[in-house]
Image (cartoon, rainbow, N blue to C red; front, side, top):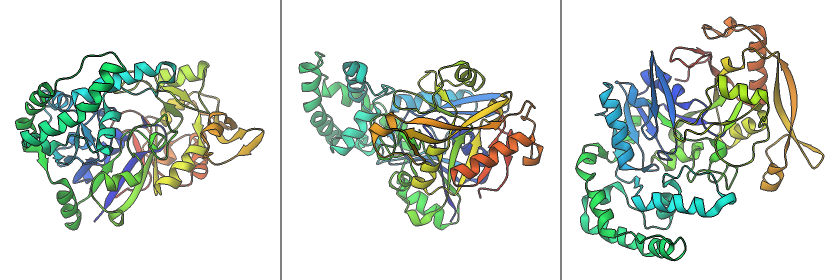
Length: 427
């Protein structure tokens, strides 16, 4: 019963899509367990590039069953747009399964998200404005709309009316917006019911039976560890749990069934949106990382903030996720630097700190302490084994492995599907 969790070990955008897709040929099920269409994966297959937002990356592998778990929030219009785009390119999407317990992003969730963020002004969180946070808030407040509600018009109407009772007060009296008509929302949601129905399943039962039958199930997190609602750089976080524990609650598979937890690390660090970022660069090096690494958000379209590798957050990710392995991506982007700084600790109030501070205030004031490693100039995109890498690139990988606290079992040396060095098999 091999169940693997694959997640981001930084602030997201580490290359999880490529890692998931590489494993797809050996995996029977790929499961998204949290987040929504605020996450984005770019997967390169041959000369084709696919930008996925809501769908699991395994949808590009014909032998694999892609699953949207109960912990995901689903915008049906985005889902169908993404499915249509893949179908037009010849991708078979018929095997997709969606949990009936997954929550629906309604039009009013999107409206509340956008007006709230604008209202915050300089204090804004940097959300994608896609209704993710308000949908999770509705879930916790027990006024959320689930996929299964689309098949009982009476229940759906009651739930939409209950949710709008408070939201319309907020929209009209605080934000000076028009009230939203419940009947219009219900009518729109019902238009999705028939097309969704073939995909809807009891995914908890499906996945547990698959594991009992010795199928390989891969759980794919969106965003990254430092964006986790509980363990990230709060409040500049997402509204769900991308960390390994979220795989269990977001899928209905118990923790004793998880055999490996794989963290995806970039060879440097990026983040999108507001919040602290100790190694962020505002100079030519930062611009070069952004340009060479094509650092633009798949979902947001925003330029990513770029900085040097941060071993402190890597160690933190190892600890809170119980990581068994790392997949190091984008090593090729660092080709050409004579020296490469790596953050090994922080200076906070004149003291050296080697672990992530639990205090938000301390983390905001953390200054990186760097060690400098020698760089390399050789092209590494054709490397097939670790020994094919230049000696300095090998030393860089080994240093990151030692600092991060878990073995690096695979290395991305280029954007293509085959441009990966596998050191230890994940399965």
